[in-house]
Image (cartoon, rainbow, N blue to C red):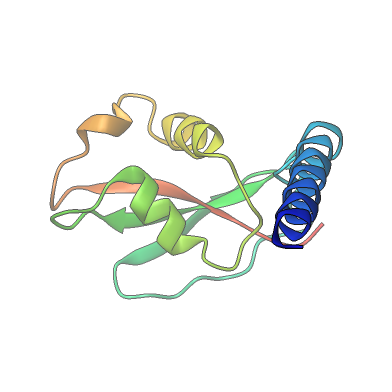
Length: 121
């Protein structure tokens, strides 16, 4: 009886695993980010952040880097409620806003532009 139960659980997990792989390959893990933010961006008012010019997919915000922050941690903190965006896209958008800056070499107490993505479509 116990052996049958173990086999049934194993079969159920294998089926769920295969369905998960099928879903990832057909639908994908992340939402399509190409048509994000067709409307004008909204204001973001925080202590050390200022709104810059809007973009098709995001608006830019100036932020002064604090100790321990990275480009990814800052972008993720600015976009807690925004749409899912890949890390590669975050880096590319940062590089387009700061063309002379290496995203892996940001300096503490320097101000850079960061993308803020919107849920509006």
